[in-house]
Image 1 (cartoon, one colour):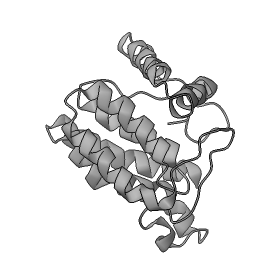
Image 2 (cartoon, rainbow, N blue to C red; image 1 turned 90 degrees about the vertical axis):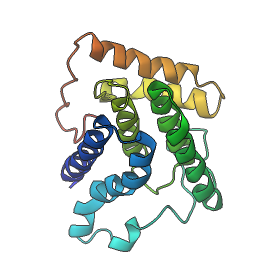
Image 3 (cartoon, rainbow, N blue to C red; image 1 turned 60 degrees about the vertical axis):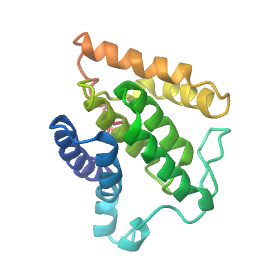
Image 4 (cartoon, helix red, strand yellow; image 1 turned 90 degrees about the horizontal axis):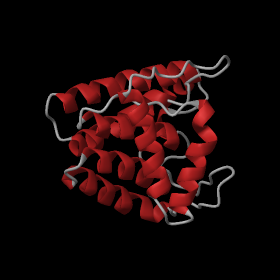
Length: 192
């Protein structure tokens, strides 16, 4: 189910990327489409009866915690306002690389959903990068520890530079022609 959900969400994100590449404002596309990515990610769980369709409607309505992190996401009452502020930023920011880094970081900082925030944040990052002509960039399972450490420095340590550097290094490697990492055996997403 997880692999199918990732594939469905990826197809939806690819449609978003196409619109951005054709000239649509990346922030507008993210506003319009991010909930679709989320619903597709968990659609197989709805089909299997594990989740109800209503479970995927809107943002979370309770607290959420991130395993192995000192960061405590915003309370549910703050989610809607901060998501609106994030989307205003994504619409207005002229630099694609800034939109990619801040979009991903702020999205996961807010943690608007009960589950899937990292995956949707990485999809969001790639849609923002597409607006600048950057390649699709995967944060592989092998890079998960460095990724989580950089996010922790940004959220708890209030220093986003390590996260920006982390993303920039991955993009530079892709631009240099390094292939996307192979999906490890037993992994459902390659940490999309």
